[in-house]
Length: 151
Image (cartoon, rainbow, N blue to C red; front, side, top):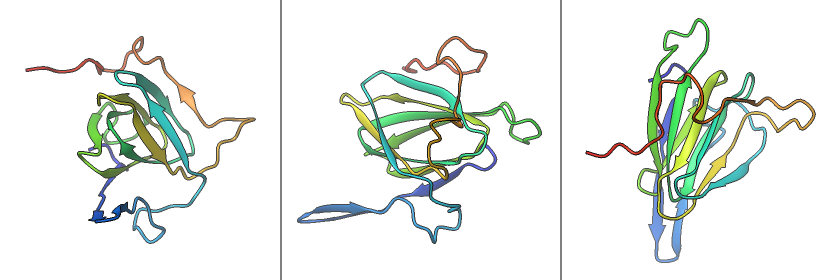
């Protein structure tokens, strides 16, 4: 696993009224700080990525549908530089994925309906100087193919 990445298995508590699922708590041992919370949605088959942050740590939870979230470590000096990690997240695998700064990440909706991601990053979005650096989703030198792997 890429150094600095954290996975927290989320507990779903169902009852006759519905369900509750805690995502991130300030007493989690990996919690750093709060920047903001936002929701991002992807249509089926759409790839959103690649991008990375120089300062921000992301905390992803897929609350509806399923996404394939892929990480690629490009950090100089990292013992896991060049490593690719793939996570299938969402209703069938409720986890929180913490992505450290400098790790490229992208996601693809793999469910039949749109998938919804909630992110609780450590920094608020800076509209004047965004801490977001993009790489084309397909035309790049990242050793990853977004196509479905049948077989």
